[in-house]
Image (cartoon, rainbow, N blue to C red; front, side, top):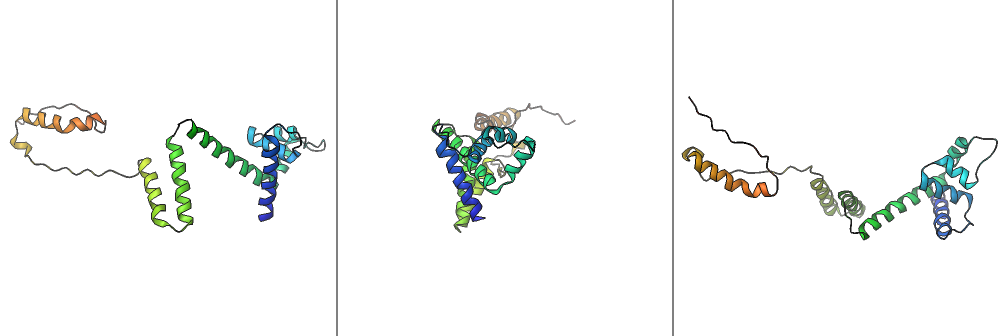
Length: 183
């Protein structure tokens, strides 16, 4: 497995280092990886890399190259780097999104867990859960006034006073008040 990873890293280095300035000295495998990651089309990547063989259809050649461990490793490395670059560009543009924040928290969680720091790992997961709305908010209601002892006008004023802050942050469901007469 270590040899496959080293071969993948070598192939990735060729893809990135030689491909940055349009250098044509890239190996066919490096061209295949670069084109596959760019387009997601293995047959197109085989064709553009010059890895065709007239004895086999493009689909067979594409499948063959995708099944090679060093190619898979190079593709995985390239895809991870592209994701990191996209996140870096989004941050540089000032664009933080919920997904970027959640991804960052996941990275922190993994690093803390791998380092044996379980309290920070749990904290990262808790923040992720809060951001996704999985943790319920508990609301305790206490009454200092007995509503039965209030007139309808006093009750309406009190409800308006208490609901005003909630209406500002839109965390309450609006509705109509209807007075029912028992009788």
